[in-house]
Image 1 (tube, one colour):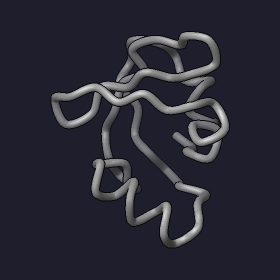
Image 2: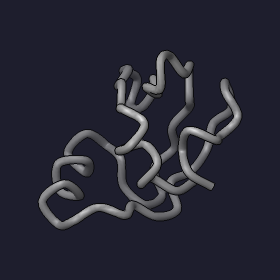
Image 3: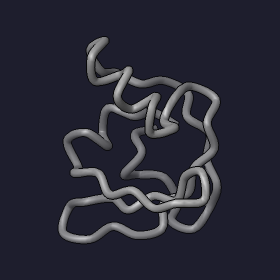
Amino acid sequence: MPLPLAPQGEEVIVRKVLLDEKERRHFESLGILVGAKLCVLSRVGGSVILRIRGGRLALDKSLAMKILV
């Protein structure tokens, strides 16, 4: 399922990242790669706020839809 549809407050595991090579490398540097655990903290105005590696990260909906959990 795409990341924005993941249950809020539950830890999920990234199964696939549907981005080109340049974007995928950037996301990997942020900790978003296949097998990574993250948690959807909230959804605000179409954006998704995640907890990953002890920090928080906000993604717009179009990018978040390309992350499958």
